[in-house]
Image (cartoon, rainbow, N blue to C red; front, top):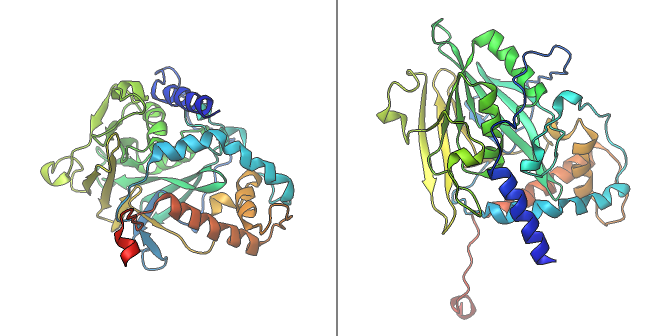
Length: 362
């Protein structure tokens, strides 16, 4: 059984790292029939925006030593369907709002929740800075995954446009929300993949292909498992460029609008961790990908408005496996608090193990 699961994992991984260039969504233009949703009060989640507006109002949890083995966690996703066995013990939550425009056909490249049903919500977090939230999860540990879009050079008609940080799945709904910003601020000029993590990398190539005229930058230590293949085999387009380690040595890169630094850590053999801190000067907003996250007691809105997403909150609110959980605000908060604990367990930066004899003597 273990061998079968391992083979299935390897086959799914290879399916991700060898994505043909032809397998990407059509470059659809604005679709006025899709249900584009915006909000100014969505909650923080996985990929996060820390600004001078938000940092003082939300408790932040810093991960100072990220040593997660993502390959192990993502292998668990192959049997994540077992969690659905408990859905019969959960009462029906809110009315569904996912539409056909939220469909993501390349979900099999990384078969984790919500699979092909990727709703997107957009909201402004600072002047000219917008967050796009989707959901990601395994074992009903569902959290937001975030893309951030920043408006730059608005006073220069020849350079005005958008910078995209940590792309999410470019569904028709997501691209329609993007086109609203393009109409207001100008074209997508730069796209940044700030991580080597598969949950970010898997969407970056398809998103970049939706805007082939934009520069596409990635951190320079991209790798694949079990075979470390070139970027062209990772679904990344031919015009991919390595992001310089620092904007201090590349003064012309962002035209004075942005600054960035790349953090690189090698946790162990066969793994790598990278993150990018991107600072938007005009709004005083710093963007990071996985190094920092912020939560409070209220479930993020991306998890509360769709039945398929809300089930995770109620699943974790149970006290016994057979309990029928009523869909109430308090139960949603209870489930969210437990999801946060599990998410912290996935990133045990503060944990240290000592397998020697010294703990016994102490």
